[in-house]
Image (cartoon, rainbow, N blue to C red):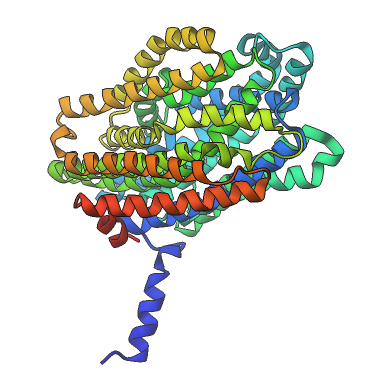
Length: 527
């Protein structure tokens, strides 16, 4: 017989994944981050729609979106973009040994040294911003170039808070505490929205970087610092560039600083070519924002949740379990990605038309929908590459994926150039897909070659079942929405998206059941 106390205990345990001090399992971490990324994706869509309504796809939004590039580059080439990933691996090693003092010394040394280096780089970048804008966006006219430079200078200081948040967040991830990482993106996105809502009428597009700074200070900056100290961090004010812990982190992170991944370089390349078209950068960013909404739920959450568990398995020498865990994650992400891609592609025109408002016109929505369709093809591939890359990071090998990424990026440049000049901006979307597919295949082959993750562990039978279900669902959804009355407003768009989604869901469920797929049960077991 169940007692009232037992029921209360079970109820409390269900909310343990919201704890700010207790560690998570891989399942609860993925669940928490998926919920967070879903909410963040919704907020991101609200942000995109609001920016579209106020500023549209023109000179101001081109300059604003381009202004992120120099701050991102500084963070990437000085911190390695995912520098916190290598720090998680280091801190996890100390955790496995029970050496909390060494863990705290390592964190303090890395934080202090890099804040000095990053701060100096940001000051230099403030002076060089005009030169960078001219080189990176040679097709900008004087007005767009000057605006981009001003916005860049406002955004640069935010990288200090992003980096500090990554370091403090690494300590939390090493303890398998994911709540702070789940909340900070929401605060960051909300900051941008609040900046646009309250300041756009006064300072125009400058309201957006103001919102960015508000979000990054409150979220990645202050909240993760609070979480790290609450978890027991003992900070040491040691400022030594030759500190052993910092040298080790630098050695592990150096490949990330010297190389670049396809995912990061892709947006730089897209912006360089698209700057030749007025509004081209803005429409690509909108397409990418909509693409990233499901990607963040499917891929980013699983990737972020997996790293500390992969690192723990590797640190314990459990090679067989490590390979199986990575392969299962990749298989499920590829399968789910194929299914969701079918939905995105079938309903793309109506999904994008929902963002047609204010200064973002029907022609902008229609052109953006074309880019969105092309990006959507590789949803599962983008998700899988994040897992494969983190498998290397968990094994303490950041060099191999970065060398592969750098080589593939360089080889992809002629493809971007040729497709852009052949078919315009949509050619850039196609080149982006080709580059990411090549990079993911390369990572899979390299992991197999180094006997870290066997290709034979991939769940091939589940992949073909999901692929078949995706094709059938796409055809059924496309046929049904074709028979519906044409939409003339957002209410009509919503009705078509709702009807198409219902058809897609029913057909996917039926197809998976008919082929004997285990995917539905696996998802429900982890709900």
